[in-house]
Length: 322
Image (cartoon, rainbow, N blue to C red; front, side, top):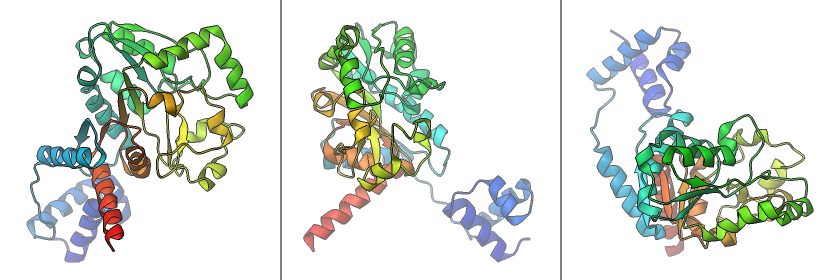
């Protein structure tokens, strides 16, 4: 019914470039219903070959390879297929992350959390039975004073505490201030000092791994606080708990990181269980960097991200052999 050229074009847009049927319809100047029929005919005519893959086994295999390569205590990997919706991926990762709470959070222990959309989705997916007896929830960083709940750690810890019916503590401080001297003044305040002292008693940390600087996630930060060009020049690939890291997972030395009210990496590394959450193309490099530095002991990610990282590791090993 349709020309072979049209079948190939539609199939390439849908399966190779991951365009939506609506986007393809606009590109080809046809209706979405017509695109659906074109794609169906592409399968029937053999232009597209369908192969059934056991995604559960695939995710388990990837988790095993990743854990072996980076010495992880746990890897929870999801397979989101060809879906490119970033927010849907956050929801899936958040739901996957909550499964690690009873496994890596000891009874009576303290759980420190960061901010971000994936942490927000994890908390939104929680039910009363997902916690452990006697646990306490604390923030590992201050808040960004935005209307968005995923940026406000005090709101996140209170929601998590109320859902799990456990105790929680606030950190009454901004995430970033005007100078390192201002940061030191805040940290010296007795109420804030009591809150940050709890970082040393944390048994588990749960945090998002931030995306690369090419994304628009950091637009909520005023240029007076964050110089994106400087961060790029210093090799920043993303952030962990607000602290920008380079491709090896090391904290970069620039003004923004020195103005943060967020757990220092040397204290974070003393927390026994450190669950990093991140996936999708914008986080390929930052997740890889977090694994290389050992700042995460457990990872929640997606299959495509893991395949990218394992491929990069294979390339590096081959280059060393050459």
